[in-house]
Image 1: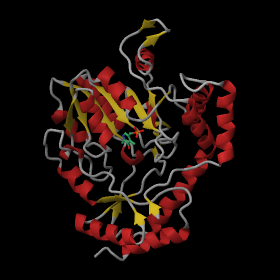
Image 2: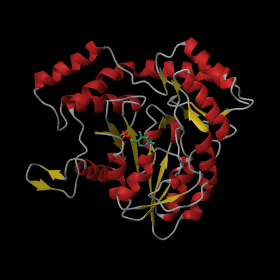
Image 3: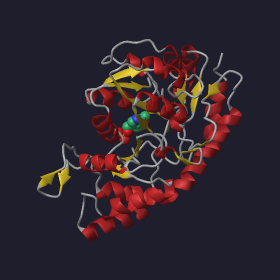
Image 4: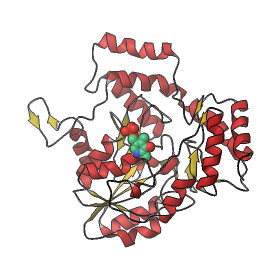
Length: 358
Ligand SMILES: *Cc1c(COP(=O)(O)O)cnc(C)c1O
């Protein structure tokens, strides 16, 4: 069976080596030695100024929205994973959708200003499939209207834009280290913030608000990651360059073997060093997509409809029409992309797709 993704498992000896350190230390959580070491390694690898590793990629969105959203209207993209929208509602803010650019698939920066009201407090945009939003334009709008910018950068491990980490953009940026993501700790995530006083608030927010054992800075929640997850991260980390280069090869195979007279794929923004995190193909219609999907499924190949439905159509949000996002959501399929896909498997996938396009 070939799925859209397959979790990268490092050699078990590498994991055992890390786990033995946990037993030696007799220390399981509360920012132990392994978590701190993983933070140091990631900070250096990603070339970011600050990083706090958390227990998943959703809690950083919630913490950022709690601190910056202030129960206001949050301008956001309808084309993302459900966590982007549900975090907004969970934090008692209101999502206000702005349609996406049909080529880059990120929020359409030219439509943001029309959606701003006096209740707007922040923009929460996703660098979808690791493709950066128009960060310069978003920053400019945010400055003009006094808004905060939060980036859901769950897909962005290793992405650079204009010569620096994509995590360095926005007031706050987040990442997910879920098992299905490019770099993973099983469950895990991170938050990035270059404003040291805001980072201080984020830091205490992720640990119940503690200021030592007896005092509290303020309100907090539990966003801590354990040593067991950090052990997985430390075992995966040495393979990261190989993971990215293997994914690049798969991407190149798709690029040169799929029928792009009929299909299209995402346009990666100029000045981006991409990470090959997903391979979305956009069909001419949903009917065409369903036909291809059925043919692939019959051969035990399971791509995923990332992202469907368009988030403005979720039953718990107020209805609004987002024609571009709805159209893309209906016609996009993410193809299998992971380390270890063989040439013959890739060849089979491309042949099935190309022969089912009419
Ligand atoms: C995976 C993902 C998340 C959530 O991350 P978890 O680590 O699973 O909590 C949030 N946003 C996007 C766009 C994602 O793909």
